[in-house]
Image (cartoon, rainbow, N blue to C red; front, top):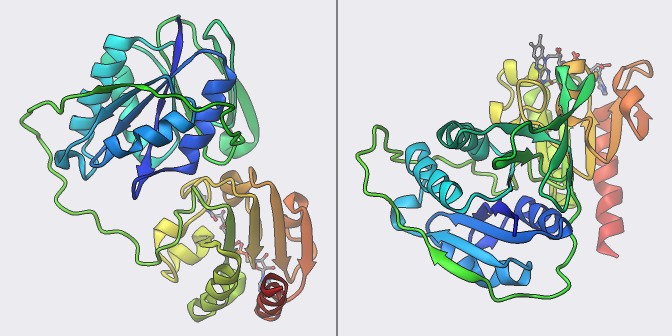
Length: 323
Ligand code: FAD
């Protein structure tokens, strides 16, 4: 029977939300659902994978996989795909997957559709996906010419998470970590200190642009984000000005996000910014200029000074969420 294999990223022993979205899509296809978890602690995911309706789990678990290494992960993932030949492979379009899967695809001789926003898998294992092009000005439907394994990287927050109707006890295969002379070794990964979700996974984002006037005013955005459980993002103008780090940049040359709620504060809405956030479900724009292009994309617009509006919103949300 054809299968859909989901590359399940995880953090702190828990499947990431993107993985849950992909597992829901895989179950919906009616095909056999396989999961591949690679990393230190991957074995501990088996029970969760069972609850998500996974039939077969492949786990590569070793201290050597504690930090992402392109060579090792490529070796492991291409090994599993060449031997199991799933009809479809799904992964979230994270920076890890965008580094890994083109290498894997080259190894196994197939193609990758990355950064997809819509997905249909037929019961025969055929795939139709849609991905934005030209900074979101249009989108293309993507299908695969060959019938071999099709790899699709989906933007997080595009597919809904549905609970599995029944849990399963997956058949578990432990995948050995190859002994390999590595050309590169990752010695240290320096993580951001905020402890907040990465922008690409955040459900709510509060983003600031040049209209915030100066870096110190980003404190206001952090306060609003704290109340809402949101992550703070930024336009390129303020990243280039050195107000905040590049990891916070949303847009064509930054991160592509698709939260449920995106609050744009003092951001004009240039096409390159919209390219990274127009997939947000609800967009709230706060801008002094009623003609700012961001209002054309916004679900709700507030014409006003962000430096006055943001603290007021923070107070109101505080009151609301306390009750
Ligand atoms: P501005 O365009 O200066 O807009 C500031 C806005 O704040 C204005 O609309 C103004 O009315 C409003 N404002 C001013 N004061 C207040 C106030 N007190 N309260 C409320 N509103 C106020 N940009 C990105 O964001 N991400 C990208 O990834 C990106 N990639 C790019 C790639 C290329 C190749 C190029 C050429 C450009 C890219 N840009 C990107 C830059 C983009 O074109 C814009 O220059 C940038 O997005 C503008 O940032 P901004 O909206 O913060 O600033």
